[in-house]
Amino acid sequence: MIEFIAQNMAPIMFASLVIFLLIGYPVAFSLAANGLMFFFIGVVLSPYSGGSINLAWPLLHALPDNFYGSRVMSNDTLLAIPFFTFMGIVLERSGMAEDLLDTIGQLFGPVRGGLAYAVIFVGALLAATTGVVAASVIAMGLISLPIMLRYGYDRRVASGVIAASGTLAQIIPPSLVLIVLADQLGKSVGDMYAGALIPGLVLTGLYTLYILIMSIVRPNSMPALPLAARTLGHGVLSLLAALVVAVAVSYAAYRYLAPAHGDNADILGASVGVILIYIVAIADKGLNINMMSRLAQQVIIVLIPPLALIFLVLGTIFLGIATPTEGGAMGAVGALLMAAMKGRLSLDVVKQALASTTRLSSFVLFILIGARVFSLTFYGVNGHVWVEHLLTSLPGGEVGFLIGVNILVFVLAFFLDFFELAFIIVPLLAPAADKLGIDLIWFGVLLGVNMQTSFMHPPFGFALFYLRSVAARVPYLDRLTGKQIAPVTTGQIYWGAVPFVCIQVIMIGLTIAFPQMVMRYKGAAVDPGTIEIKLPDMPGLAPLGTPPPADGGASPAAPPSNDLSQPPNFGETPPAKPAAPATDLSQPPNFN
Image 1 (cartoon, rainbow, N blue to C red):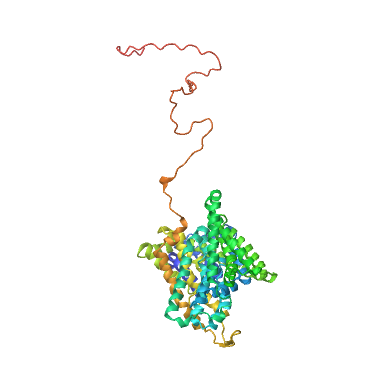
Image 2 (spheres, rainbow, N blue to C red):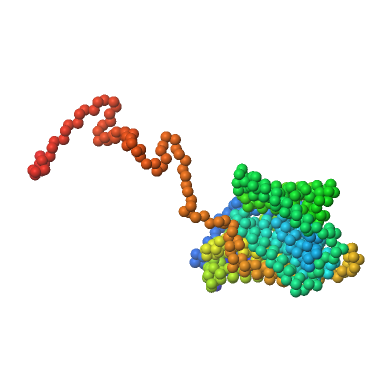
């Protein structure tokens, strides 16, 4: 019995961790307690394991190095998490979400389902600027849910689209989960961001397609805004004209800058066009020129600052100008500037942002420390070998492995959030994926899309809890219409999330079926035959491959070789060498 326990320590240890988590112990302390408890048991049972346990008391000395080494306290990659968290919370406090929802809602108002389209579009913009699910869901729940209920939206559709759009912050860069996944997989955060960009946009398109289908199948579930609610009036043609002018100016600037700036001319030209149209919109509104419609003014003034912040953060990362940590720092400064420009930057806002950032960063740090303790013991009992053999032996090869792993992560997401999954499961799955030849960036993005469902799973989805905390629980009087509005029940929130969970599962299948959506991060393939290497000419030397002179010019005389059979000569005239006697080969040899 003791030999059986010793030789199967890895599965027993993993099952014990699952039991601790199901009981309800905090994840960080469950990981650390399991690691230490099984370390002591493993040292005692090591003689009975037949060599499958490689634990000894001196191995505990490695824990301080694990804590303070490059994987935890000195990890520059994880420093991006507090920066992006701070940026997101400051932007949420600055009222950017409120301005975006109001403006985009007015833009799409005449269309059936326009408010739902606005929520999806704003959710994608907030995901690309904040990267924090809680901030996005709470902001859109507070602002857009009462408006959608006021104008007769189905409660399940309204709650589902708000919760799902908020979770886009998990897959659209600068997502926090992508930072953690890149760190756990040992890959570049910039490559992970580049790989996740297209799947995130495709998922946004799938959400939009679902709303389009629902608006056709059930038009009464999402009516258009009434004319009285369109406070910004009409003016789409004015907006289109402004966009045409901006494109024309951008193209002209590109042609002017191309000879001097080469590949960067397109970015610089686009920046010139955007800045010009932004300045014109501000001047038009401030001076009451009314060259543009109110709708065009508001859309341009509200949309361009967050888009500029997105370029400041993601553009500099993708262009290789800044690392993700540096991009997060610039984003935090940009968020402070945007809040100051709106007159909403105060000491209380900064204090709240710092407090929330500290809580989240401490949460991540404690889980990471617990994971290091757990992995030290788990690797010591050859747990990684057990997991690798278990996963690589699944039928179906690479496809079977991907299907099995995604089912596992999908089920675990009912009970664990994305941080816990990233720190516990991903280090166990990555070696098996690497052994099967799976690109780890693609694998990480695939897991990121799957972990996104952890926010939407009834009954433990965090996005559902965030929305429940701000949705009305009792009937209330609408402040604008004076009508009594019925509350949103928990069941309606849960049922509203189900279609979007199904869409996320479809997205997992699309990512497996079309890996090129992610593999674009590698760029275009380079043909080795087109590579030309030129060496600089060296002074005093003929270039390599130069033929000899045509006139048969004499080459420099080589220095005389020394005869090592003679004593050294220090300038004296060497004596004449006696001539060797001629040998007569017709006679037999003479040995006298």
